[in-house]
Image (cartoon, rainbow, N blue to C red; front, side, top):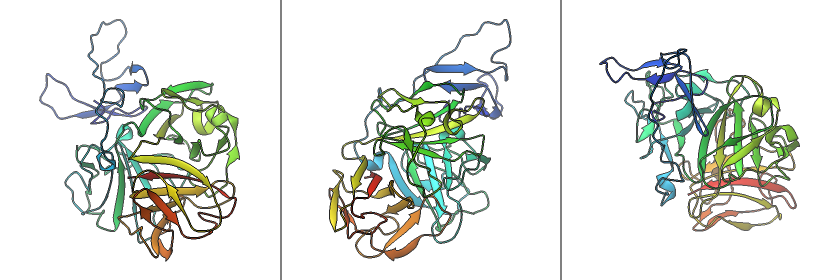
Length: 362
């Protein structure tokens, strides 16, 4: 089952219903956008035999209950140095967990339910690496701390799949194609990474000049053009497009994509043009978390949240594309009941005529 871990191109958690033994790990199946592929291992697909199967749909946005508040699908928590699962509490099953030490230099870490016990680093181009603490065996949070590693110095940001967020894994084939998702609406921002090779992260967004443009999550570059990443095609309510570029679709490489969209009262993927003076950006809700990036020139991916002190005065901000500790020496404005303010014309967030994208969550 996908709760305990079905991994494209990796070992799945397998139980035998007629045996008392504990779960074993083996590559059994992969979940495809419209079905399942049975592998030849673990006795699931030997030649010449006949099988029956039962498949039960995940409660995705097309058939599941919609979230009523941002806290239903997004949470933040600090570590407790506990070996008991979960290390970080959310109140819901977590599908994406992002964590980092806030006060010291260390890579960002990213785990996902579909790649259990594997880790990606948003600030590097490294392929995934095994981390046994990246587990999702809880309906109320994620992670564990075998060695008591993750104390209060570690913060996690957690998402549940729903209308405004989805996670998709797939194997590359170097041909133009579409990959199905289950959001029910068109994603307006996509983070995409090869899990098996050292390709940089790519980000597509409706806030860029077109879907022939992209940003790189692990550096501060301005938008660049490469039609081969998203095939110059905007996503739809059922699928997103890929070209044959290695960063998104190299043959025999495994990938993971994180899809984001705006949902009234819950999340907002947006863009704006700087005007050089104090202003308010409207999201339709009071955000607890925001990422934003200048797109027409070099600038960092800025991360603010209310857990670490996004409010009036100097704010504790982090940079998703670096391993640096948070910095508390700049006023980025503050959340309001319907959006957020920008205090001046700083080039990081509001230079006159500069272009910016953002992702905010209630």
